[in-house]
Image (cartoon, rainbow, N blue to C red):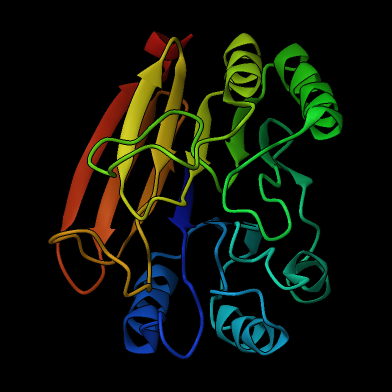
Length: 248
């Protein structure tokens, strides 16, 4: 079984970041010993160089391998360049055990809150997903912006501007799992045979209503995909348990 911890929207800064909550999350996730940690953006709050210095130090506290894509806040103030210096490539492909693939896609644009994949990057993504489909890989696509609107998040403003094209590509390629952040609200949609899962904010003070800081955990076996919502320092909840045969 592959275990993945999914965190998002840290918003590391002097004002919007709860370091105490983050350190609790680090201890919890390290104790789970997941195979990997996937971070779907907004690691920093304003993309400032000093925020990235702090982010690199804090992210190094995680023991499992960590892979991240940038969010709209990360791409502010030349942060899209600084991300590559401190975090890594903004789009990437990870292959685990020859049949498990994660494709990270940068949905951010410099100093713009809304998301966009763009045609050149979509062509690259489609090429990776073509190979995944041909090789019958279990495939995850990670990006910051949500592809489908999220309930209880108010007026929709920041969904991908090219959401229709990207959604069609994900569905046509039979991607198993699409994970996003951005809205600071957890959610699971199932469309055709693809699961679209959003994570809440792991450590930001910007929370809606009575929402708590949280992260998702995915237990992926040959037969099932189990999705858990973990409130930091609190209870865990099952968001979904899906038979993989039903998703084919």
